[in-house]
Each structure stands twice: as structure tokens, then as C-alpha cells.
Length: 272
Ligand SMILES: NC(=O)c1ccc[n+]([C@@H]2O[C@H](COP(=O)([O-])OP(=O)(O)OC[C@H]3O[C@@H](n4cnc5c(N)ncnc54)[C@H](O)[C@@H]3O)[C@@H](O)[C@H]2O)c1
Image (cartoon, rainbow, N blue to C red; front, side, top):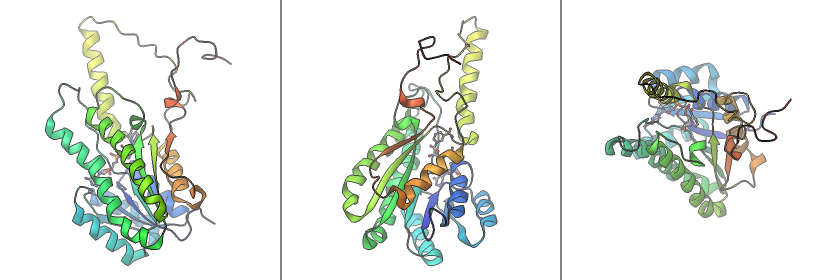
């Protein structure tokens, strides 16, 4: 028996990375899943091997008419939508001072307005049946600030606020809304961030700057940043009836990264 037996899910950003993993895991757990994205070839390629339980449709999450069409296609193919996972997002890497107005708007449009439109699109069906789960994929950047990603951080905090406001209003209709604050994600998204950071550091050192490269153990579990599978498992839990009393929460999948600060050398920091 799967945790999502009989459920119908609509998941955004399934062409690669976390969204692809969510679509795969949800099907393994018994759901039928409509994946949507703007990268159609990749999205089709993720859904095809999953058989009859999976399908793909082009949706730009910024477009309300794409959302209406996606909900209609999901209902026609699989039945009423029980679960929405707002996973699609974009990252812009720029210092606060260099961040352009246009790109700021673009990021907010995809990462915050997109999920809002998706929630409005699935709500009538969920409210009519008095049940539904909406999972918004946020980030550790929904819980903390971070340098070099102003618009992304603002969008992910906004998504957290949207989650809480919606949870307060929709709970009475049987619709739960939660946020997954993920640390892991795809390299496709994070690569530009690490490339930009490394390039800046190299330039700084080439110009005679001194940098402390021996980094303290910032990951409490001491084993990387986790995987997209870890994030997919949390999404599956929140989508399932096991999470029937979880509403309006932030669920960190970060190995404890946002639990607090680690001061190198403090008692308890390094040990056997
Ligand atoms: N990559 C990371 O390091 C990281 C860390 C924490 C949280 N996250 C979050 O995880 C989620 C998944 O990201 P990922 O890491 O898999 O990155 P990704 O870039 O591989 O996947 C994002 C997907 O969203 C799609 N998308 C972008 N704009 C869209 C639009 N307008 N309409 C529809 N689809 C669109 C992309 O085509 C892509 O397939 C995001 O919400 C992201 O913010 C990522």
C-alpha cells in the first residue's frame, strides 16, 4: 500500500530536479500525477517511463489560463485534484545593489505569483469536496536571509507568508497548506550561485585579498546538503492523510542547517 493511493496530484516544475523526483516518488506511492513545466521535452521524458499514472502538460505558472487548462486536463485524465505541489521556481544571482528591477519582478512572478495562481485554480474543486493538500516548496531561504539572492529570498519568504495566510482561511474548507523549507535542490538551479561565488572569491584572492578557506562544519549532520529525494519524501508526507492535522507549518528538510549557529571550537562542535 502506498501513502498516496488513490490520490490525484498536480506538480509544477517536473522537467528536472526536485519536481521530477516528486513526480516519481508520488507515482511510487500510488498517486496519479500530472506534471507541468515550460521545458516540454524534459517534462515528457520524466513522465513517460512512469506509465499510465503520470502525464505531462505545458504550463507557465505565471499564466492563469495555463493553470485553468492544467486543472481541466488533470480532472479529465485522472479525476479531481487532491494535491497541488508548487515546486517550480527560478533563481537570480546578483548583489542587492546590482539587482535589476525587471529580474526582481520576474523572480517574484514565477516563485510567488505562480503558486498563488495555482492555489486559486485548484481551490474550487478542493473546497467543493472539502479536502485537499497544497504543498509549497520553499527553501532555507524562506527561514533565513542569504547574500546574493535578494529577489529569490524575498520570493521564498513571500511563499511562506502566502502559505500561512491561505492555511488560516482554507483550513475550514478541509484544505491544508504547508511549506517545505528545502536545503537540497538541483545543481541546475544552484550552479550559477556557486560559480558566481567562486569567481568573486578567486578575483578577491588574485587581487591580494586574504580569505579563510577552512570552513567550519556548518552542516550539523556533516553529510552534504541532502538530496531531492529527501525533499520529495516530505512533500509526500504532507500530501498524505498521515499529515491530516498539519496545516500552515514550515517543514525544514535541511539536516538542521537552520536550527541555529555553530561556533567553531565550542564544546560539542567537534567530537568523536
Ligand atoms: N537548487 C537548490 O539548491 C534549491 C535549494 C532549496 C530549495 N530549492 C527549491 O526547490 C524547488 C525545485 O527547484 P530545483 O532545485 O529542482 O531547480 P530546477 O531549476 O532544476 O527546477 C525548477 C523547475 O521549474 C521550472 N520552471 C521555471 N520557471 C517556470 C515557469 N514559469 N513555469 C513552469 N515551470 C517553470 C523549470 O523549468 C525547472 O524544471 C524550487 O522551488 C527551488 O526554489 C532549490
